[in-house]
Length: 156
Image (cartoon, rainbow, N blue to C red):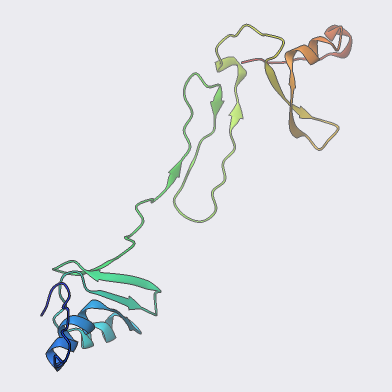
């Protein structure tokens, strides 16, 4: 078994051992599955590659075992958490499939703020399928008398 590569000289004979050592071990061989790979590569060398068609996976030999070249993913779940002072609640965990979570705004858990005219306020537009939109505090102030329209805004 050769490691590295060989520079062949002019007129040098290419032997079967050279083919096996320098070409066969240093290519990405394609096999139907791990059974076919293991039947053909009985003495793998460290750094040797093999592609398995059944799983579309590239493997390399680590010196003691075949390992996925890309590696196995280590994400087993996603958790959305919310800080105690964020005013949000309702995070959840998903370990597979589509992830969905509903975050609930809890204004009473939020900290106080001094409102500036350029601050942005989020609103659910009741006339537009409750789509989330934004406006500035100044635009709200420009509306006039809030008591007349019954508008309640929670700023956080």
